[in-house]
Image (cartoon, rainbow, N blue to C red; front, top):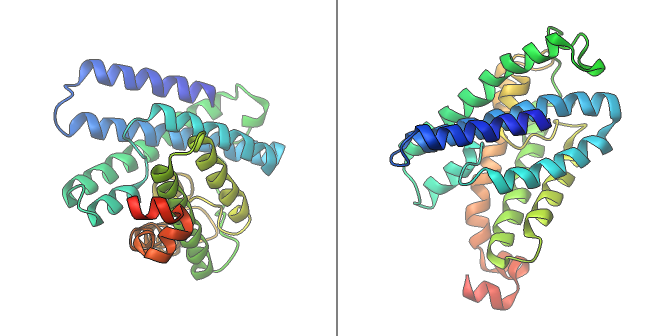
Amino acid sequence: MVGCCIAAQIARRLSRRLLSPEGIVPVLMNEAIAAAELCACCFELIIVADNFGVATYAIFLFLLTIWWGKVWGDASACPYTHMEDVLEGRTSFKEMALRTWAELMGGCCVYRIVQVFWWLEFAETHKGRAFEECNADLQVSPYLGAAIEGVATLLCRLASKTLSVKEPKFSSYIDSFIGTSLVVAAFNFSGGYFNPVLATALKWGCRGHSNLEHIIVYWIGACLGALLSVPIFKIPVVKRFLLGEEKAKQA
């Protein structure tokens, strides 16, 4: 995982040097690199969970989430953040679609690089991983899985919006802790992805669910949860509950 993060940092620096800062291209490159880093690290996290348990997985995920928050810049590696921006009028539908495409390319293409490293079997835990058949993480019905992914994503997005307004000390740590806790809570039900690109890169075509079921759970479920967070956060009673009376009036 450390190697994935270092490689991504090198790629970001090369991108800044080689590409003009103007236009959409560097933005898309940043999204692709972030998605590749996210998915490569999460491929390794699967091995961590299988060999060392969910608690160890959670610790690594918590630390990685903090790291990504510091180095990704304006990249999110997650399509529904751009969908929220479209809903709130901060970006265009075209930019949202292009960013999502870049994230999918980065996230899905990095598997081939990960597969080569697994095939080389540098670590004991990589043995036999390169070409084994993958299994879906969905352990409940697709509709319940979609509800789990949707509600958890909604809670994640409400927490992030609240922290961005209140700006408490150690907000990135609090945000990472909330996100990691929700992932662990959903781990044995839907897998706890809360990110359509991540779920597609890791589990598209795996045995245990159809492609349509995958879309229902990981795309429709998560995206609906995120989009619902926009109007819900604006409801006065919700705002007062999350922000307090004073902050709610200022926001």
